[in-house]
Image (cartoon, rainbow, N blue to C red; front, side, top):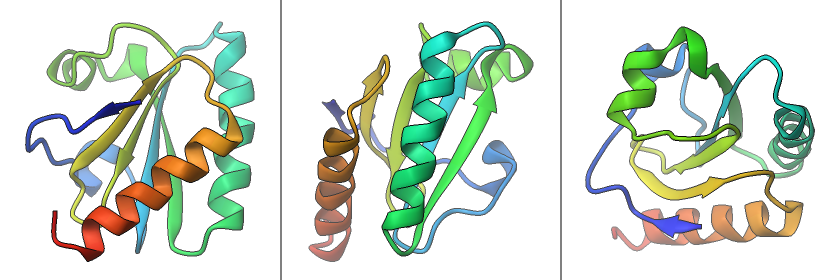
Length: 115
């Protein structure tokens, strides 16, 4: 997972839903993407396991301006946002559950340390 995306922040308007209390998992998907379905399941499970974490899925084809602004080249792409909506981690392709949990841990620690 790549660290930080400058100081880019996403809010409820871009996401179409509220940010999580502790972190938000944002998934960019497309209709015929098989790894997107598996990613949806993994991120949904993690969001259900970790209190204060929300999973938001965005249809890349329906949100092309956001895709371009964030330089999303493939689906699935997963962004981990801190409580302020800052992009603190990014991964392309189907993530492993353990990697998502580790990235969330880093995002929460970064937020609590004021990084």
